[in-house]
Image 1 (cartoon, helix red, strand yellow):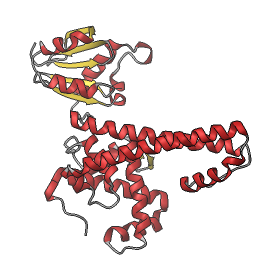
Image 2 (image 1 turned 60 degrees about the horizontal axis):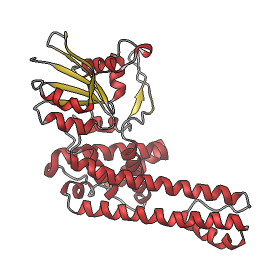
Image 3 (image 1 turned 135 degrees about the vertical axis):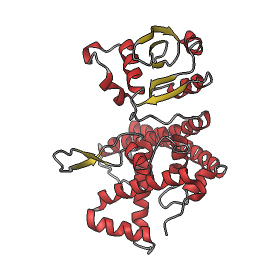
Image 4 (image 1 turned 90 degrees about the vertical axis):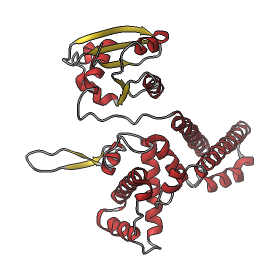
Length: 338
């Protein structure tokens, strides 16, 4: 089979494949290929364009299929849905594969950057660390809820909260004393894990030139820089910095018609983890801007005065995303803002 475009609906055990020729005629339909047979099936097809939805295992299968000379594209599920002709009531694996096959051939389709093994390995460190950060917040909130039942309410600062809990721990009733003490021990364990993964990220950054370059940008720390490199790589999937900013959900949603542009809130699509890191970095820039006179700080202060704190944060984060794209794309040719 020559000039086949293939859509694959990924699953845990049974996969659906739908292939069409250059005229759009279905020439390869396999609705129930087992996991053991998938590699063999794809290997027997001449090099072609393969589309898959972004989901668990998509990057692994992308790397495997590329070994056979195939061109693999990963698509966000929301971009596949419009091509599912059967609609909500006709959704099944075969229909999904057919829709993916249709979507991947569209000339203006946007794809998810395929990740290498090294990128995914680094992302696992970030995911583990972020999981423990969430656990820390959960533990503290659990203790806050329990302590408030006994009239003890402390400020949001973790340091002040810990000091307050330790000051009243001995005065708590027996069972409550035991529970809070146990939660504090668990919190210490979680803090240790966060520190361990933070050190591991810092060690990785020392050996990666791309990460070192990104850290030269204001508001870009070691966590943000390593997450950007692990997620985006060389940014070759993005034509411009604004496209990357839009992919991260930092651009306003449009509702324009009749020649009148209407911009709403940011879309918050894409990678929420990196978006959060960029916004946190923007807070740092705004906090330090009052003490500095460089062009970036001056721009940040004027923006805050003109548009308000929240909108200024998003604008600074979007600007940083665009500068990250330029640095990853241009490398040594990138010039830092004066």
